[in-house]
Each structure stands twice: as C-alpha cells, then as structure tokens.
Image 1: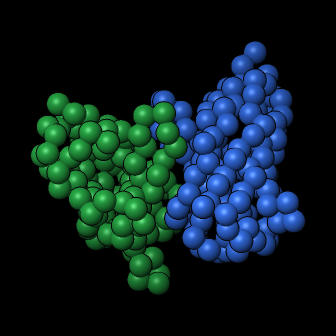
Image 2 (image 1 turned 90 degrees about the vertical axis):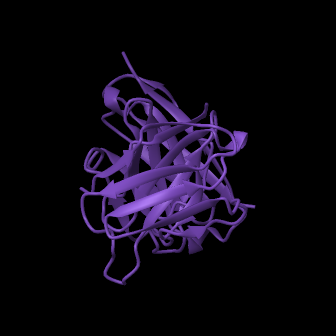
Length: 112
Length: 121
C-alpha cells in the first residue's frame, strides 16, 4: 500500500501568517495516464471532510485562493498564504493513484 | 447541490451484521462512482470500498474484503454497505462519498455527514 506521511502533525499558526503542510508518498503518485492523483481535504471541527485541492494543484469551487497545492512525484505541499480563523481543523492528503486509496495521518492546524 | 445522507449505523455485537445506506441527490446518480470511507480518532480516515456508476466494478480494502459488500440501486439513488462478521475494530464513523465520474476513482469530491457504527459486546 502507498503510505502517505504528513508533517507536521500539529501546526500552531498566528492569524494572518502563512502555513505549510507536507505530504510525502512511499511511491510515485504519477498514474499511467500521466496525471498525479493527490488530493487535499480540510475537516473543520464537527464537520465532514471537504475536498480543497485535487490533482495536486487544482482548487475546488468555493475554495479561497489563499489555499494552494504543489508538488510532484512523491512530495507534495499544501500552503495557506494567510491563515484565517475559519481554517482551523485537520488537513489530510489522499492518493487516488493506486488501490487501495490511502490517506495521510492528518495535520491539526490551530491558531496560536 | 450534491447531498449524501447516510443511515443505518448503530450498536452491534461482534460477529453481527449491519447495513448502511446512503441516499443521494443533486446529481445524476448512475453517472458517478461512489465510495465508503470510515474514520476513527486513532486511525484517522480509512478508505473502505468503491463501486462504479453501473455497479459492475467493486473495490475493497483488505481489512474488509470478504466481510463487507458494497452495492447500489440506481433506481433509488441509494448506495449500500452490507457489513457482516463485524469486529470491534470496525467501530467508526462511516461516510459515503461521491467520485468524479462513473469509473473515476480516488477523487471523493463530496461527502455525507456520516453514520456511527459501534461494535461492542
């Protein structure tokens, strides 16, 4: 199975400051079609996961442009340019390139 | 607006069975694959199973293969997860999630609110 390792696991951030979460894969996530199926989810307290970013860097509709995804191969990053109070929650990466689908452990973002 | 509403969770003894349902609306149901994902505080998010738009292809995590069966009724816009031989470690909040196409997997672009399954004696 593909193992996704996120860091850090806990991320205290001051409001208005940037934040960055990394996701490292045990195998390349490039599929045979040339596309990399790496997704980022946000889970706010008490809510279901919400997809933020798909195929490494594509933002979902309604996702603020302060969120961005980047990376390739086995190393990926989610960045928040300026953290707002509503960004508090747990962030997960997920790979959809190989069965079984697997998730990272999650990174808990909190306001310092 | 896509809506997914799970039901069927509850308390069951080890070795027992439960069937989860997920009623969908807001999209053309048979055009999209669907999946189940479960969550526990200890293990986080764990993918369980996926099914293609026409129901002809199914996929399972090793941890549930042979015990769980995913199915769908496209006439009722409903996804199911039949869970047999339940174990304590199956205790989790179970979400259904929509994929990006009839045979496009690993996208999970919309999620329901989840239904809680507790396996305990």
